[in-house]
Length: 195
Image 1 (cartoon, helix red, strand yellow):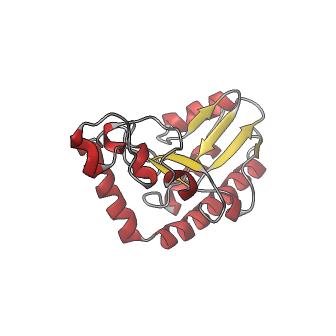
Image 2 (cartoon, one colour):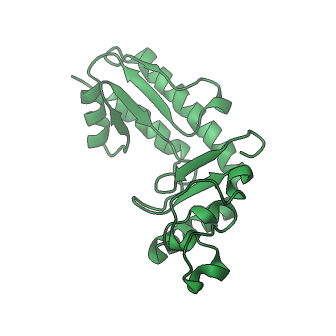
């Protein structure tokens, strides 16, 4: 992000890093802001310069870097879950996961197109970029008719997806724990859809 000249970024960890709802998040602060103590920010106990915290003097002296934005202590139990998840990611290897993600999502695209071409009652457009380098492990389909009924059908058959009004279904084969067989099974479930 530094090389892209990003000033600030924030992200969650609950979904794709398996940390669970409401768990820890991450921030990035470009060094031009993170190393400038005059940059406005909320002043929190854990963001105060560590070797000055217990002197209890007036004013706020920020810790350098992103640590200067920390408001309070990290939740211990949540961090334990997050650490366990990150260890699994490290063991699997991000390069391996990204390669599987591209293959798995491309296979999902193939299955979706196959089902649409062979099942008259399902019509949709894939609105996620076609280029695997421009998308993650997720495809959004804009369903032309009966989208909510299709979503309810796949849900009733054990598929966990997201519904977005008015007619978008988001499908996300996660490379860490989804298999190609899972995507194939989704295709079979889609083929069984009837009004």
